[in-house]
Image 1 (tube, rainbow, N blue to C red):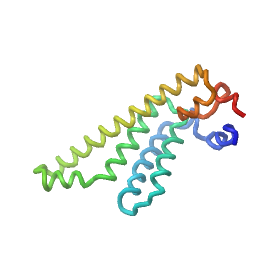
Image 2: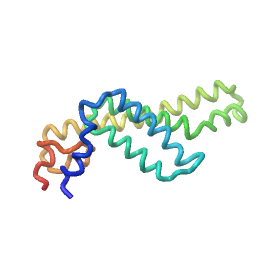
Image 3: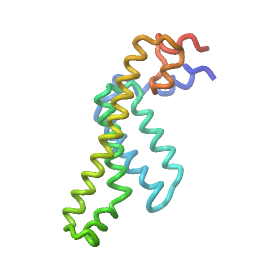
Length: 154
């Protein structure tokens, strides 16, 4: 299947996609990802939510990619491991507020790591697509094919 055929379905996610929409989609997919590990145990959500995050990141600027990765991971940690706050309050000698503050710090640290990865990926893919010497590098860096990238593949 030619690369251009599947990439044409993703034309709605491009450079003109609003930043707020990208961040809201990342937050919702992060919160929904926790459903595959807690509560209902819908294992398909683990594939679906990460796929939504990757589609939202197509053609995103590095700062927007960082914000999307941060919010995705932040909401995932908050919704999947709230028991940490309870354990810290009951067995750790902290107040409920202290337990939630520690959980927020854990979520922020995890979000910063995830956001840093996606921000770095966005910066790397922008540099690679500007001077692409190898056809197909746009696929390795999660960028949709353009006229400069992957044009030799048919």
